[in-house]
Length: 88
Image (cartoon, rainbow, N blue to C red; front, side):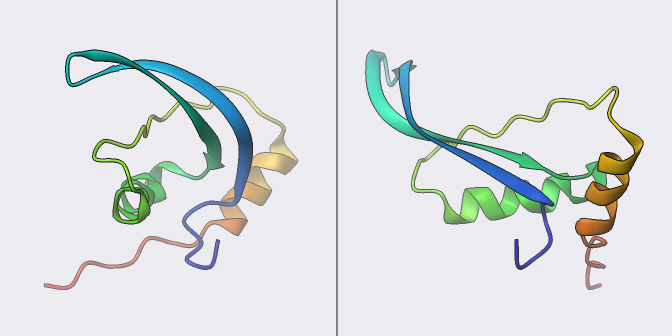
């Protein structure tokens, strides 16, 4: 939140995951986080998640927003900072 990479994050503890990893079926208790951001901040948010996450391959997927309330989408855009300019 401090870096304004997302406007909001919903944290859902106690998710039970069953997945295939290194040739075996695994089962684990995990936490699901849903973050709301803009297309302009998506790659920077992904880099930050990978940097902070303990998994070798953290789940990071993006779902397109095709509809939403005008007020909510305006708030989201206002809450997320502009991307940082890359240094040359």
